[in-house]
Image (cartoon, rainbow, N blue to C red; front, side, top):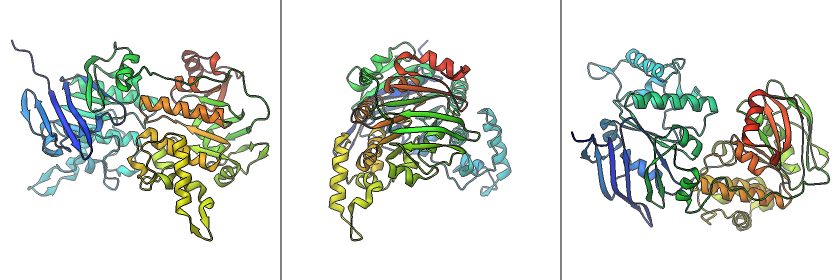
Length: 505
């Protein structure tokens, strides 16, 4: 008996754009009921490949077969009719429409061929949400009122409203906390148990190991490995294929001795009701202090309160021995604090503006002459700051939205470098950044500290905190349960502390 053909086969796929060969003969094979992980650095061709699969791009060459038959995916509608759905990282939902309207958009149930059956749409949406384990989401609620995790569930429900056999998930866990990731993986497991295939794209290699069946690795528009077993292929080997060099978590060397002298940042008795208990911490010039803890432990809230974006219930923040007016971002920035927030696209970057404007926006007074903006001086200063951080491409006029995640983060850091900040607050500095670019960011952060900057770091990834920080404060439910030099801790010890707690030390 002949073996069952793969659900999807893409063979020799090529795609070029002006001046760029995005795909150079890529092969991808996906079996029914498997989670096939697609890995590669930014620019490796992942986005182009899934847009070809979604019918959004037409390939220049190659063959696509679906259930053993050659097909041409001329449009997203054609792909969906075959049973291929794509959930992009930037969800394409309509915020002013209801959940049910989004789920059935483009294929609304109708009566007499034109009257939309809203009750039927809400009922079928409720069934889909129940299947996904989220019966609490009201089909009549506006999508714009939902959390990021709930919106992602709506996108999955929309995919399942068709007779879908393959779902592409692009960075689905990027905006989720650990409990939401667990629920996502449960949903993926249920889908594959029903024979649905999932193409899963993520920068988080630990997720690939946990959820994946097989892995295809892209580099420079080529598939450098296909069909590798996800759970047994060594992480270091996968990263070497992605980057062309051996990189996992490549952290710069720490200083041999602890920093001495007066702290540049002092926090005394800082607290916010319901978020974190009275907190004391110091950061010296040249020191990186890490905050480790689960989502909900108060990590981000602490950074935002120090920065003045939240007003504390009690406590004081001082820079170079001078107390700050709490609850004032302006006072914090003037004193030399800079924040790179967790959601850099929404909270830090002007996505439609140039790199220059994003870098200069906190230092505009430097470039004003008699009420006029000296654009030449602005461009020159921004270029100097971005070159110091090796931001690529070296084009200050480029819209910041065209940059990779790692280079967008460098633009945020360049802003504070240009401002001359004394204390850098980093919240999830490598979220959405590929493995190779992470190593570059780690080197940048360490170098800035070595040049005298005080750095306070928050990250969900314990290895990142331990690898970058000189000293770590472990948080649990809004209080510090342990403080120690990073070299005295390991991942298992930190996880034990954040799960169980211990007396402060």
